[in-house]
Amino acid sequence: KSGDTRLVWDGLGSGPLRELTVQLTGKQRASGAAWRLDIENRGKAAVWNVTFPDLQFPVGKDDMVVIPSVSGRLHKASRPLSFRGQYPSGSLSMPCCGLYGPGGGVFAAVHDPYASIKKLEMNVKNWRVGIRWHWPVPNMGVPGTGWKIPGEVVVRPFEGDWFDIAQIYRAWAEKEALWWPRGKQTGRPDTPD
Picture 1 (cartoon, rainbow, N blue to C red):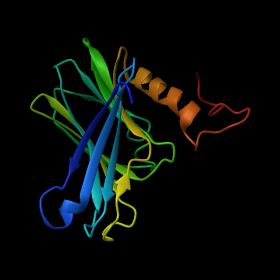
Picture 2: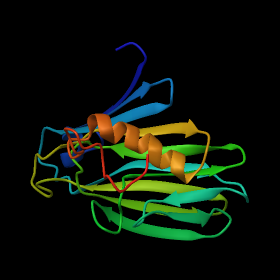
Picture 3: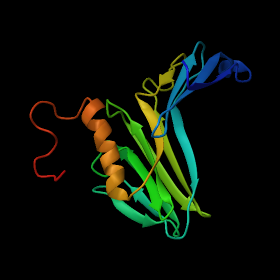
Picture 4: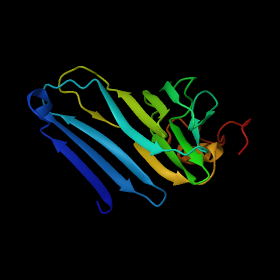
């Protein structure tokens, strides 16, 4: 399609990996970029877990990292961080995170309408923040099993702070998430707009 970026890796080495095709498709949008990953398995390879995406961003001394733990956590980017959590769970409330500071911010989220199981890993060291999502593959270890991301990964710049990150994610969830309440209720009545 026009405006799409598509990268394909095929015949990855010898043995079972030779039968894998990995396709990464990106769409540029006015607000940022959306990425999808698809692993086709035509052979005997056994796919167990997929790490996607693996993002790295430089940070400044005044930047803040937004961690979607419980009701949300702010972490000074000037301090080391090692965080891991599983979504969905009570300890990882949203599959979105980001960072912001005086120069603007970066929003990173998994727009997964099914709320599939995934693990978030966030690290801050050497003035860089790392954001990785780890996906357990259904039927992991079964030869011939492939994987396709349920939804897409969205990365975009934004102006604001943690509240704006939550509002960007909410705008998507209200329209696309299959788990979002439908009908007259528009979210939780005890949560302000």
